[in-house]
View 1 (cartoon, rainbow, N blue to C red):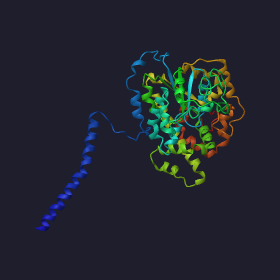
View 2 (cartoon, rainbow, N blue to C red):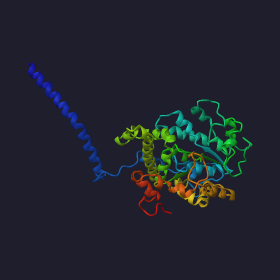
View 3 (spheres, one colour):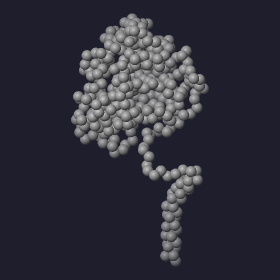
View 4 (cartoon, one colour):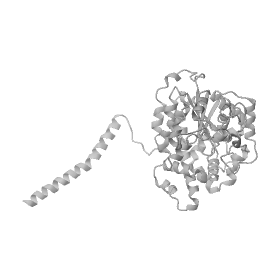
Length: 423
């Protein structure tokens, strides 16, 4: 009797197991049947992997056009204009930002998200994107109180933020008598350092007086993060994205690798832990650890660039009208014409003094100083082609391999070609 009962239990358990195993196959069959009924066909081969979350961002772009942006001349020039300089480390973004810092109608904010990244280290860059966007939204509206969340103190003054030692607004009247904003020329840090610190509420009042507010930062990884801000009709946000030859970027990053280790780690931490990136996150040779971090982050930077380009290429017309792409090489080789293009897009006037300034900044002596983050006049051609002399054949090959699509889209030729850049 006991044996029969045991057999029944065994049979019941086996039957239950078979049913559990069959359920996924039945569900999968029904799913495929539904695809066939709706005309879907199985792909013959696996399609090329697309950028993560790209479809989500594209869906946001392709939603209905903002109500106040519907006309052919949609940009309201009487509204305050907000511009974000979208770039990454070592692309020449400080030079680009300086061209706006010099304009008398621009309130310029240099690297305002730096304190956030330092305060939240070693968080990953991906998880910080929402906080970066929220901070940007507040700063564009001249609300600087958000900085107190990451500064470690509530007593923030002008001698702390926005690249204050070279910031024309902070170092000029009425905040400081050292300079006058309409006068074109680099601000000397040792001169500005003598200015009396002012409360950020005074700086907020100055911000509200300017028709154009420009933020330059390198901590927005993907253009898709800015979708809600671009769609906000009260913000009137325009984006200028700066690109540079990935080989030149890599060369410059290696030169400044010790200063970029923390940022590179945060970028790498935003990547899912595939085997390829596990190796980069845990390099065996401690001597070359900084170089490994910087090189690994460069690979991700090219991924983000490609994602941005795909996003813009499929964007609706109203978005494209508020987006401008610029190459560093064009900016330094054709400085006057590119400056005109930048200012037209930004609804800013041009002057002979500004034209002369950009010419002087690209006709300096040498490539850079011992302080690579210092803004100074450079020899444009040496800055562009320095990577040819400083990178090894292996290093060039690696960058060309994992940035090949980006280089093709931007018109950068391979090293073995006679022409490295297309005009």
